[in-house]
Every structure is written in structure tokens, then in C-alpha cells.
Length: 200
Image (cartoon, rainbow, N blue to C red; front, side, top):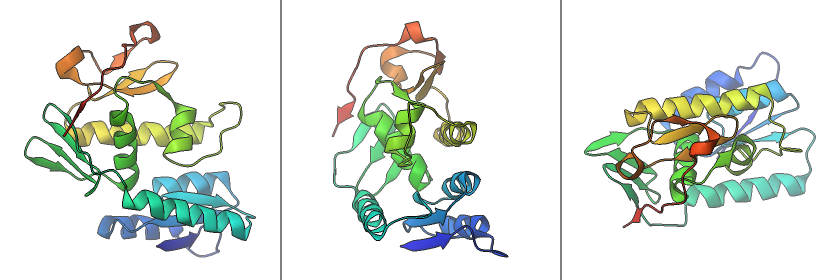
């Protein structure tokens, strides 16, 4: 595990995290007292970011939680047509093509695909994927941009936008186009009922 302090002077924590993430999938935690640095840490590849000041109890709890998540307990493969998601190896494939997803991209896709057609608000995604504390469902512009960046990147890597549907004014959901044939952006009224994917 890598621990990075983003508040140090004359230190580019963002570049360091990006370089580490290019070479390794090792878990990383950032530390900062700045909301801007918190967003940058997560965008740079950190799996979690702890706000300063923090207690030793919080530190131990967050490290333990990250280590548990990195092991991914479920071995079931999620399959939707040509798209398959492999939790044990953290691999995503579209047909015979391997998709190089970052840790957060994988966690985001796996969460959405585990609950096909269930709506996830931005606040819920921040809580469950980025471990943000969201008060009264209020999401800052910076945090919202982080989600949009990851969704956009996933769509490009998957080769098509239809897997992740934007429900305007609400959030996102996973969509199996082989079942619904829906576009990648729908109004709220177009929300479909839950349809489970195939578990191999």
C-alpha cells in the first residue's frame, strides 16, 4: 500500500500517483486538508483520501476497508452479451478484447453492473466507490466532475456509450443493450425495471 501526503510543499503528489498507477494496481491512500487536493488525489489514482486532521482509529479503519476491497471477495463473473467483468482478477473484457480499466473505473463498473438498471445517484456513487461523506445528498462541482470523468473514460474504453446510461437530473445506471436496446442517455421517465445480468 502507498500513502501520499498531498499537502507537502515542493511535492507533486498528483504526478507521483499517476505514475504509480500506470505501473501498478497497488492500493493508494492520499492525505490532505484541501477539498481540491482530495479531488486531485482521487482523479490521480488514489483509492481513498483521508481528510486532515484524522484519528488513528479512522486511519486504521480506512486502511483495513481498502485492503478488504482490493481482495474482492466475490468470484462470480458478470456477463452481459460480449461484456464480461471478472471480480477476482479485476479484468474487464469486451469479446476477445481486454479493457484496461483503472481501479476506480473497475469498482464503478462492477457496482453498476452488479445492479442492472438500478439507478445510482451521484451522491451514492461517491459514497460507495470513492468513500466520500456526502451530507444531505449535496455533491460539489469538483466531485461531480470526477464521476463524469470516470464514466466518460469507461465508455471510451468499452468502445460504446450504451453500457452506462445517464439519467438526467438523477444519476447513472448500467444497461444491457441486448435486452433493452436503449440509448446511453434517457430522461427520468424512461427508467426501466430491474433486470439481472447473467452470473457465470
